[in-house]
Image (cartoon, rainbow, N blue to C red; front, side):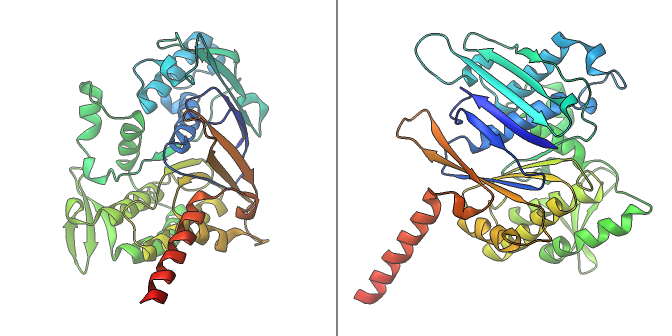
Length: 355
């Protein structure tokens, strides 16, 4: 489990310490304040420390060596945020500057500190080396669906220099894994039920790795399904393969994109359910509707794992934002998205009154 992360001089992200919940972590803020950058920085760090991220299976980080681990972290940061050079991720200021990232887990053996400067092209410097691998592969779900990219995308990404983020390739690869069989299959079916009800069918994969939605005895190609439902299909697949089942990490960037309010309510229940079953979930959103649905399901509920909210607020400086954090929405004082929605409601009521 991620316990905390301190990010200093990293893009537009506030130079501050983030204290995480073991369950659900929700990052709120307007566009351009660093929500996605936080998710990608955390995901990149975890992916680099995961045994699956190297072909040298069974080799410890200590044996792999500090230099190779530094390269893996740098490659993940560049691959997921896609700057021209690693130094471009350092907060802009006059002269030379350095970004420092410190990540702490509930088990100290995984803790890691590293940094890189404005003149760094593709190398980080580790100042605290973890002693072991993270055993569970983290999952990153981007704002768009990836079901329709299966199965050809991985081969394309691995063969050619294409302008896509590493996490796209990672997630498409996970979508292609076989479904679970045996004792855990019943648990998967139970968890899939609300998702399949929302989609109106079940996700199927043919022998060529193409995805379909099985509805009313027939099959519909993934490309013909509404994009919002394809995001649900992607989530259903990751659950059915066991990737999102018991422990692990999920990073989801703006999950509400292309979903109507009815589906967002289902989405909120699924997100909370994932956190309840032991997955540490990190969500970035600027949807007031999703935020409120999550709060209704979690705040003040003794049978729920603790949730944590992080608000990113514009500071007046174009290059930085301010971090607010707390265990409930009420502790986030500056919620611009809610303020704007309330202001819109007032304008609407004024129009109705004038009419």
